[in-house]
Length: 191
Image (cartoon, rainbow, N blue to C red):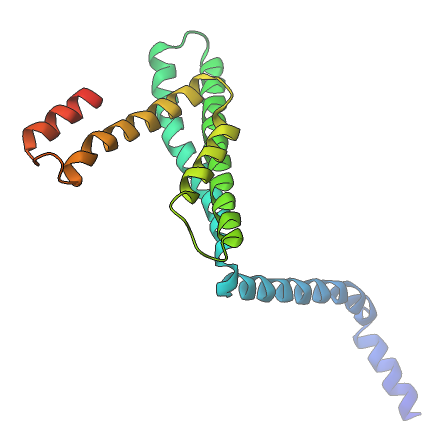
């Protein structure tokens, strides 16, 4: 009699207990899987062997963020000052220009970092002085070969930076005297 009374009390006190188990068990499994995934991901991220691969991902992120920050503000100002049409058309142009710029920079950095990683692996972990040139040439050819306004602006910017560096090179190599006047004139001419 006592057993029957206990069973009846159990059923009366917890009529939804089986339902609770049915509902919470899958949730507990999902939580355990997510926790395992988090631990595995953290272990992967903290492993020094994975640093070169993570540099590629970080480069992609930085290219996207930098391209967005630079182009959005520039395109918004240019659209408001010089574009004709509705505000919607102007904003569409701003977002398309921003998307193109961010995509191109992100893709370029990803190709560059991946090429540097592959060249490092092929060179048994040693980087030669030609590796950055080869990686930059490959990335530049793949990304900037399409002719559009944004690619032209990026290429002109990079070209101007290279010309300015070439103008400063004789001074840094002590081939020319380091006079402030020469530096100022070179900056004004090449800027």
